[in-house]
Length: 252
Ligand code: ADP
Image (cartoon, rainbow, N blue to C red; front, side, top):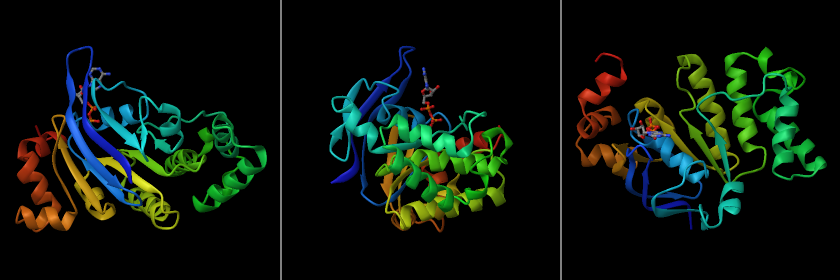
C-alpha cells in the first residue's frame, strides 16, 4: 500500500486559479519523497488538500488507504505537518508545545510524557525543555516545529519548504534531523522544496511539478539518465526551464 496515493486530484480556487490540474502520484511507504517545483507550482495546495485545509474540486487522494475527504479524521491522524512558517505559540515552553499537541490528538498523559522526552532527545532540545519558544534560536525553533509534527507518531511527515530562507549551515543541520526521522523511525516523508540541491541530497524519489501538473517522477538517477543530464539541476532546467530558475533566484 502507498503512504500517499493521489489520483487525478484537482483544485480550482474560487478566484478561478487552477492550482492543481489533475495530479497523480504514489509515495511508497518508508520513502523520502521530494516534490520539487518553482513558486506557484501548486505544492502548498497539494499539501493543504491532504491536510483537509483545502477542499479538492476533483479526483481523490488516500493516506494509507484512507480517503482525505470521506475518511478525513483517520487520514489526518496519520500525517504530521511541519508548515512553512514557524507558527509556534511564543509563550509556551518547548515541553508544553509538544504536550499540548499530544493532548489535541488524544494521547494519554503518560504516553505524552514519554514521547516528549524521546523527541526532545532526538532533536537535541532536552536542555531547552523549559525555555519559551520566543527565547530559542532560529534553528531550535525549526527543530521544535519538526518535533511537534511528530508528537502523535504519524506514519507520514510532511515538510513544506522546511529550510526556506535558512542559511547553509543551519540547512545542513536540519537535513541531518530529517534523515534520522526517515532512516531510524522509518517515517515516510513528503518534502516540498524549490531547492534543487535539497531534493537531490535527501530524496530517494522525486516528482517535478509545475503549473499544477506533475511533469515527471522517478529517482534522481533515473531522471538524470532519462534526460541525459549529469545532475538534477540539468534535469530541472530541461523540464522547468531557465526562465523559472532565473525568476526564482530573483534575477528577473
Ligand atoms: P507553491 O506552493 O508551489 O508555491 P501554491 O500551491 O501556493 O504553489 O500556489 C499555486 C497557485 O494557486 C498559484 O497560482 C497561487 O497564486 C494560487 N493560490 C494559492 N492559494 C490560493 C488561494 N487561497 N486562493 C486563490 N489562489 C491561490
